[in-house]
Amino acid sequence: MWGIVALFVACEKTLEEAPKQISEENFYNTAEEVEAAVNAIYSPLRKDLMPNYIAALECQSDWMYGRGSWTPLSNYQGLDDANITRVQGFWNGFYLAIRNANLVVLNVVEGEAFAEYVAEARFLRAFCYFQLVRNWGGVPLRTEETMDVKDLPRSTEEEVYQLILDDLATATISLSETAAVSGRPTKWAAKTLLADVYLQLERYNEAAELANEVAQAGFSLVSVSGPEDYQYKIFGPDITTSTEEIFALKYARLPAQGNYILWISNHPSTKLLTAGGTGAYAVHGDATNANYIAWNSDDIRKQLWDQINFGLGPNTLVSSKYVDPDALDANTAGNDLPIYRLSDALLIFAEASAKAENTVSIMAMEAVNKVHRRAYGYAPNEPAPVDYAPADYDTDTFVDLVVQERGYEFIYEGKRWFELKRTGKLDERIQQGKGKLVVQKHLLWPIPLSETNYNNAIDPVTDQNPGY
Image (tube, rainbow, N blue to C red; front, side, top):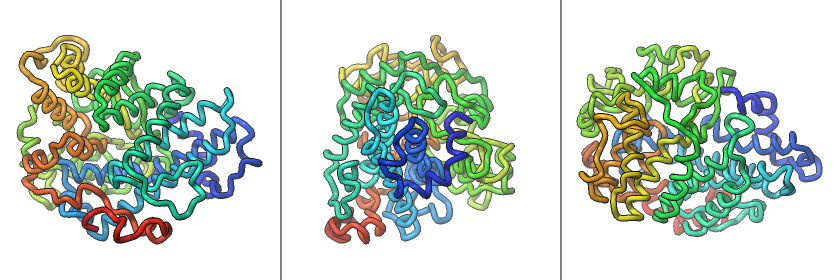
């Protein structure tokens, strides 16, 4: 868990309070100062933003449900006041990280010594804009050149994606193949993110090529034989990194340095997170959901759900994907937060190659089978009785298979909502899983008041997303 976390502990207070006062003359002169400026990009992401953001996205999936103030996210009728305020916090957090990345890009001289830091800042800026554009559509494009412009209109989605592509072009070239410190992005992290962006943009050949390059780069899926192996060997609180990790946000059992998503997801009766005596169990599943019913019980990932009646009925499911019985309180769970794993690269490659070639190749099916075998306790790289056969699928049914496998693999990783929107399967899957209809306004979150009150170039009525 340590790696990059250790860098935050000593200087986090400075990084949170000082960036507005950072100047080119007195801060960007040494590698240590530049590294501290880069660390400031992570601070808003690591704390409350990403755990709550992922939980909010999961509420909108076809699998999971929000409880209490999270409930309207699962009803698909648009956001109520509580959730409009919630997503405003996400908007502000991503733009704070972007501002801190802009400071690095603007002020650090791109020489051989600092090129990797600038590439890291561009990678993180691209990551933040990728979240913004998929949730809000076109957004103000604040870069190192426009960060001082108060009134900035919404850019088009195409313009936002172009910045993302430009930033990742730099990152894929300038980042190293191995991280000097655990938690820093590598060339492979940048290529995985870029493959994900290409998949979103339906640039399937490029997505397949990059994802396959990552999949062949020496990563390997961790073998498992039961749910405890998922909990402790892949997502565990004592893991510094794993053979399948491509990029993750790092946490540690230190005051204010822990992963808050465990408090959101766990129920105290399981004793898998005993810190603070309780948990929010705010985002949960249900055993009557069609996805859960159809899921083979031999799949170990299904066993990462506990059926607990905490007041919503005996069919309520609580996730046990992230566990840390030794966390000191709700903010000290040591588990890292996965952003990209080898499973991502394999499944991006599988879908993208099938769509690019309009056929199901042996390589595409093998990519799916690696993830699928591991989930049943078999060696990922060896043929197994649970294997799918390419001859049994055409392109459309194979893509459905990939979507299903992603649904099983990435629960509580914040990816399902985006996938359903991207593949055009949203209405079908939400109806199948939850029996609910999605109104058009729910597809995008509202531009928050914090932006429209500050930025006079965005009219709060005419420039707002539909329905808000």
